[in-house]
Every structure is written in C-alpha cells, then in structure tokens.
Length: 248
Image (cartoon, rainbow, N blue to C red; front, side):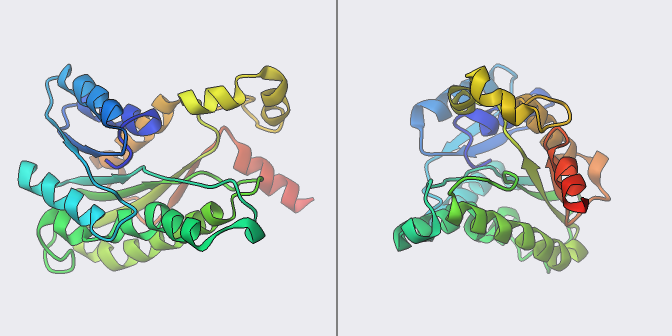
C-alpha cells in the first residue's frame, strides 16, 4: 500500500486488516504511518512500515524488496500515493512535471513490479494477484500535470492488463470524485462552497474514505476474479451527468 499514512490509504489499510490481511505500507509521514500500523495491530494483523521515496528511481524497488523480505509474497499492490501542484500549463516547471509523473503514473505501478512476487509476471502464473491504482476523476481547476499523469495511468492500467493478464495478474484503476478525507473536509466543509458542486451530483453528496476502501477490498478479493483492465468510477453519479450533458 503506497500512501498509507492518512486519508484513503490509511482507511484501505485498516479495512484490509479487518478481514485478516497483513499489509506493508509506505509514505512520507512517519507519525501517520505509525498510527496506521497501530490501527492494523488492533486487528491482530502484521504491518510493516517502509520508508521509501516513490519519486526516486529506487524508491518503489526498495519498497517492493522490503515487503517481500518480510512477507515472502505479495498478493495485491495498491497504488494510492499521489501528488499534485495547482498550476496551469504555462506555470508548470520541469521539476514539478517529473515529480508528479514519477509518483502518480508509472513508477508505483511498474517499477520492479515483478519483484513483488520474486519473478517476471510473464514467467510464472499466480492466482488472485492484483495491481490496483487510485486516481481522481477529471479535474476542473489548474492541475495540468496531475491530469496528464492520471490520463497516463488509465492507459497504463489497460496496457498492464493486456500484458500481465495471461499470467493471472489483474490490473484495474479506481477513480473517485471528491472524498471527504481530513484534507478534503478542510477544503469543502463550507456548505456555501460545496452546495453548488453537490447540486450537479445525482446523489447530492461527496464520498467517504470507507466507501473507497470497501471497493478496494472487493477488487482485492476473489469476488472480482473476472474484472481486468477497467477504470472504475466511484463518484456518486457525477460521470453519468457528464455523459448526459455531452449528449445534449
């Protein structure tokens, strides 16, 4: 689990522990990671905290190697970590471009993913092995690089599904809209600000971290054995409104 120190990542980690899963978590917030580890321990499961910078070339490899050294095998990889800069196209720096793509798009998913099972996925079949990525839906404010990285992640999901599917590895992405983590509550807690947005959402509300975590649990279980190469919208119906408006 990348980005397991808080918000959706922490919620997913605890939900997986509740059903009997041992987990490895990475993140940059040492205090938050320890809090997640303690929450997992309350459910009697093991949790290894791995310090690794996913924006570096060696970070994902380090995380995968330490998880394997501890557990011996990995059944599901959840790429939850993400970063963004609120910048328009002409205001984006090369440094921000490189960092955002490194964290959001290829490296968490493919960097030494074969190491996660101690083999090249094309050489050995493993049942119920999952690669899951979390990415937000289309953004309407200046986050140029993040939008590019998430579009790339959608295509990467499909490419990995096509290439690794024959080896028994399923790859899917989960695309939530606004989810009320602590950070999101600070941004959207003012009803005067959130009401106009909710008015365009069929269910008239934002999501909760537990709802994303429950979907990840479903994706990581045998209940989703036939699902592969999909980007799953979990957005209270917002994408349906986009489709309707596009048909007018």
